[in-house]
Length: 156
Image 1 (cartoon, rainbow, N blue to C red):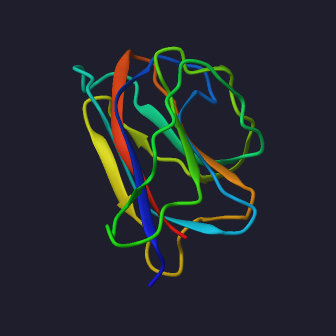
Image 2: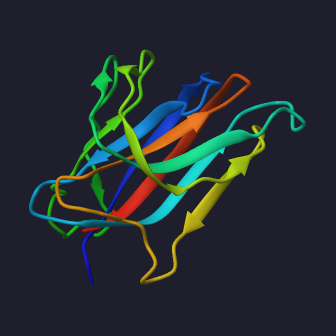
């Protein structure tokens, strides 16, 4: 079995309506590994169910962008006896990116009411793969002011 890691965030403001949106979390892979995204959870705290749905995108990113006011949480090993993650994570802070990362391949793109969320586990063998030295980001575009909470889990 591969090593499994997760990174999570709580109450990140998602107040960018224009597509492509705001990067909430970005994983950067080392040059020595590929990773497979196995699970994604994103929830919103909106109060109006009839508001415009939130655009959620999991996408490969070809640049790091310019983080400003972001945090760099340490990925958590799901198996506490396993090795540390070689991947690094950046999670949007109050200021987020002054320059958004460049999106390339859109891997997953549901629309969600701003009062709910979505959790997804990819079937074995069909998980999105991120190449060595690659990046993947969760990008949100919300027409209404909402906060986003969630996590990304991957195998290396």
